[in-house]
Length: 463
Image (cartoon, rainbow, N blue to C red):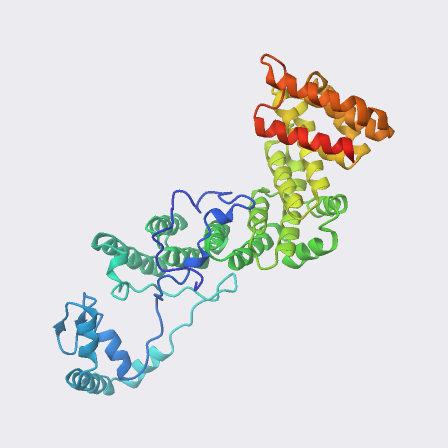
């Protein structure tokens, strides 16, 4: 829980709604990364009390309904500086010492059996995810600086913390816990939200995946290490796949897409669960600024391939929107680690599926153009053959951009230097003229896209 701040005024709970699935997309975390605010407000719930007179100094000057009240001396102060001067004074120290002696005398005569009952309280249950167990939230809020919360929210928070302690002592439903977590989250209190969710995990083991996945999303905002731990634990509980199995697949076959795809198909053959959590866990690993960017990217690939294999066996329609989305995520990760050819392959699979049923042929052809340019630059004849079939299906050769690029690719394949040096440069000039005149059937609409396209095609002529 130390990774979470007590309050975070900059947390936009509507924009980053951790109660919605897939709220985090690949390489999107930089837009709402709040990890630098984890220690912005150094307030710890249930901190162990210090021993001796120092404890009385701290507690007794803060715990009587005001931040600036001294209980031993029964005095209220107008500012912190005055109070700090007072707690160092001889009068205050004498009052504290006297108060401690009275308190000790009051407890000295207590029966031994009562003392034993106090000392033998049940230890908290272990957390299902190996983190520190959930401790009861004290309703005392006097340690929180008053500038962070107005009086009205403080009353609401005090009421909610009392509710949580009441829930733990009764057989409250999971919905009650989740509602309390939502209220805390919308009050921009990440740590209290996490404590409620952990309590829900502890008291509703049969439905643990519901609060646990929300807790994982919350940690995605502040600490990805904890988020990864939660996701991997959830995958083990729901799908039965060990974290070690996922890591072994990542390190052994992560960069070899066909083998990894086959391994994931074999692993998910008997699975019947929804693949959505696998996709969401993949998103948590497909992020920038992680401690081990290569390893986390490989883990993301494994999780996406597992989700895709499971989704493919369950899908009853073609094209399947979920499968298409997973291939887009795979393409983004492959591009991120420099495997652009595999990323293009994933996008091409999506376009091939859509080409059979889509009415928006120009949009699909615009998606094909970067792949066609890349295949031409790399002289990738195998992919060019596949692209040719899709282009014909979409009537792509009716567009001048594709016609010129295909002529260049064919000339490079034949090593036709005459065409590359003499004929095709004229076709590029003619393409530029077509763009300038209105009413022509063209794909590229913006000037920046057109200039970039001409520049890349000119490089294809000279290399």
